[in-house]
Length: 205
Image 1 (cartoon, rainbow, N blue to C red):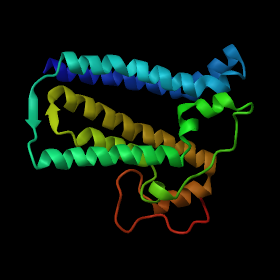
Image 2 (image 1 turned 60 degrees about the vertical axis):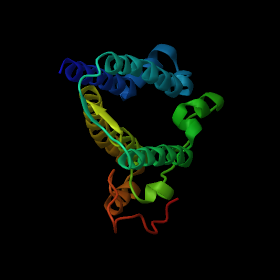
Image 3 (image 1 turned 180 degrees about the horizontal axis):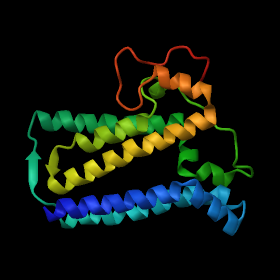
Image 4 (image 1 turned 45 degrees about the vertical axis):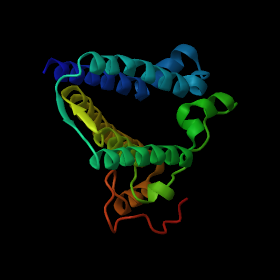
């Protein structure tokens, strides 16, 4: 079980560092040290650092794979792999809907005035869930055709982080968009699609 616990510890540390970098405290502190120029490149630097910091987590999983819990054969292998492919497609579509360049931090770097007004997206995938990127990400990690104790720890840690992080994101979006987002919350589920609960005409795009 050492692989399970080492993976869980590593993903917990990663989640803490990721949250710290994403916090308003880190952003404002960076702005005080470097100036307003940090507004343009912070998102890109954040994404790069997040990717680099996740590598040690994957190394722990690779070096300490633990015990294999299950390995799927056909037809379930193809079913699970199909869900993962659909999840990747959904991730791509979700990024395109919310401006992939902005998500990556490239648009801020290219703009002379990065502080453009945010836009609340409630159509497309966002008609069914408020956080389709999280939905797709969770589907991808859990519909794996091979599960080990270390992968289980990784998935549990990532799931907990996504669920907790989405709560903080909900507060930020409520503060940013006010009643428009509160109305959206009442109409559309957060992560898991629920039949009958979709965004209908709200006057929003």
